[in-house]
Image 1 (cartoon, rainbow, N blue to C red):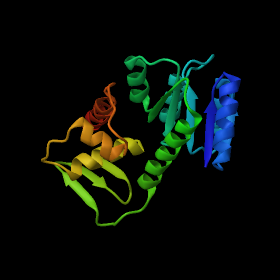
Image 2: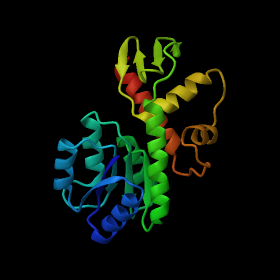
Image 3: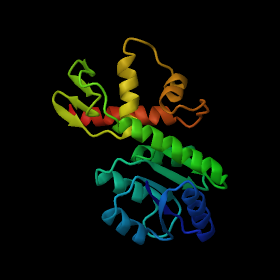
Image 4: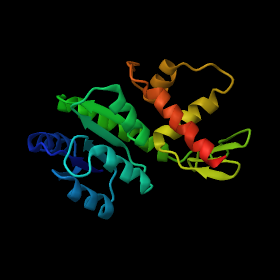
Length: 210
């Protein structure tokens, strides 16, 4: 697995690299956004870990750049900020997770593994007959495609899982806590509207295709 690590604090980037390499991940480490963008353009990446506060293009801009290119691999943001607005902004741009500095490197490794598990499940083939159709919305589990009136919706792996879980439980009232624990597969601790930000993003994508 190829992981891009971008942080202009050399000590942090070097530390993250050591822990990821100990888990046998291949690391592309950069201290500036220009080199990171070149790597995104030239290499096949499986994940990006991006510092938000960095010179040149910041982490938000690079996250958007990745998603605008149609790349769907997981993105984890590193931030010294803890404001909800920053988290919501990153999630809206397509980030999958946040880790706040200072952090335990083992926690970051655990988050990386969690994102890879989700991404792997997203890409695993499933039963060809496993298709859900609801009022013009078609979810093809094997192909991991979502179509609205035959127009494909470009969803990230996390967004696909959210929509799939809601579709599988249509007619039921699903709380944010249940959705978080079933999709993120972590204990619900959310106080920053993470779930609703993703729901809002999915709705926007569906409206754009309607």
